[in-house]
Image 1 (cartoon, rainbow, N blue to C red):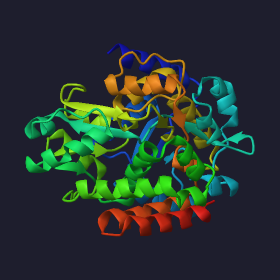
Image 2 (cartoon, helix red, strand yellow):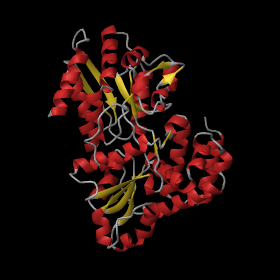
Image 3 (cartoon, rainbow, N blue to C red):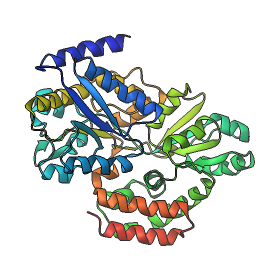
Length: 408
């Protein structure tokens, strides 16, 4: 109750700048149980100012939602605010003059002093102007493990990816699917990226993802990666779910031993009433590297000709990054806050692991920050083919290297 009371008080102060109550349509793709619980924190805070949050949830993943969001903006039917990921997804919309410049809001709020790591705000910046508000840090390099599943198999809960691979035969013998995997390219690409860092190492990953070095992508370090992913593909045989949260539920119920998924999976474990260290384990960096990427979410505000709407958009932008709202949202979402000056003592064990890595500077840019949306989509399409069929590892690697060679 103290957090909610403080949150309402803080948002009431923000609302004092609004001339009158305004309804803003906000689009996002947060529709799972844990995600819905998190986004409600934003809605509650905005409604507490006397304004109205009109929820525009779009079912499905970001890959489903982003084309709808972009089509509406280009078609002249923009929402007031929309979720997108950190990185280059809105670059062309900004260049076309379709996104609201938030530089004045950012300067008034001192965002340059509070956003950590600074690269998150850099991802919102084009030609020195700020066009989005980063609201969380989501990292993809996590292995989630079901204690019930490993108890059924009579083996200890693994401490890292290699121990998990070794335990997989025992899981199969016990009738447990080793690896839960949703049948969508973005999920398979996420797993590929996590395994890449664990197997090829940070230097090789940077050369390919940041420097777009196709020679390294075609070389021995990545050959080992594709062989490891081919092995993981076999561990996921029989995983017939589509959505990521369905795969997470297989871990929660003990029907699967593990899932490679971002830290947003924490929200599903929380909604299910499971306790970290007792019902499940979470291994950042797959237990092999104390490293996480700085992916996550930001809100953009399409240009609107109504000055009242524009004023409300800027008010909402300031609210989303305010201290109490950051705490309430990220505790529910399982993500890390973008502010480096707030108290996250109430965070669970998984979040504390992530916060410790963040404090030590063990962060990498996400693929969305380094590669264009088109390049990311090409890789996702390749991963969907690789994971769902029998494409040889060498063939997949050659196609991947070709994508990197022409990446922008």
